[in-house]
Length: 428
Image 1 (cartoon, one colour):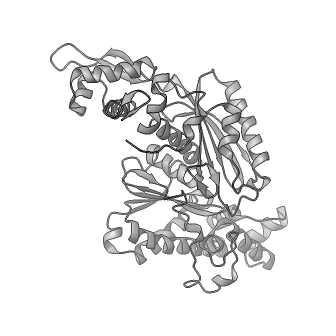
Image 2 (cartoon, rainbow, N blue to C red):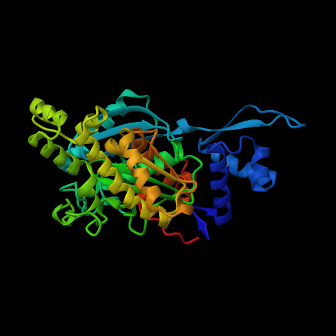
Image 3 (cartoon, helix red, strand yellow):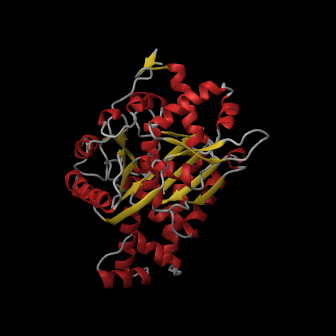
């Protein structure tokens, strides 16, 4: 069986050689030969293919191990460019990256995802154009987008996203692919955040982790065996809509934006905190929130976090309750999935120690001792950068996968080939 003129075994070794070089695990030809247990001829042939398409170059002489010093190999991250975007419930950000996943120029602004796909994508395109105009021209190899709702990964289309009115079934991929003549991948933003943490954050070197975003909504990205787990259709990790009706008094009275009642998000998400904050401000139970409401005419979850940090007891109790509910939900996931790391992110999840402490307490109290023996629960260190970075790694994972690399390597570049995003059938 062959793919784009390459035999299956040739493609296997080509992908392995590329990964060893681009991740820095092998820096010379002798190192490649040792790692792969292959002859010098095979290594030379695979490197020649990668050199021919501009992905690898040989640089300065490396240290000698007794014979002639070998030349060091370098992955040419500058060979192509990536455009990435992250759409949140109340903001959006874009960036321009290279083939290592490193981000350069970036833009961010407040934005309401409820503005709909046409206006939102038009704004992203404007920002993309600004990035391309402001930076030296490079071939565009791909585009990655994260959105705040369930996405069918194979098609790149949001499916019934609760906080994204008008986005259901919208073909984000085709819209951007036609505009930029590039391959486009779209995923839930929590998945891209988890991927960003796995490759460039506290998750590096971790095989099994949970990334939990607590913001307007609540979601989780799952990494198992060092790989992002999306599930059969792409909606794995949507913990915000786990029902709490059997464990939380009054949960049946809280209607979630998904249409059900008693969801975790409806009880502990940013919108729930904002509603509770408004009630506390109007009633005067929270002096800090009441002052904020009189000053601006509104309060939100960020105001709760600030009030709690300033010692407002009502705000402290609100954050602790939200953290306890999230922690009790995570305890079940920790027992089931047994991760070694739980990362908290998002505007609320990445806030101060109060919520983190409440989450930890609930998880450690409700999980099995073996599941928590070596478990770390910490805040993300990438913050707002995780989603954008992860969107870039998503594109690179797809472009350099065995299935897709075989479809473009002999052309020298995937630039100008949006058809690469079509589903690949693994038949070899």
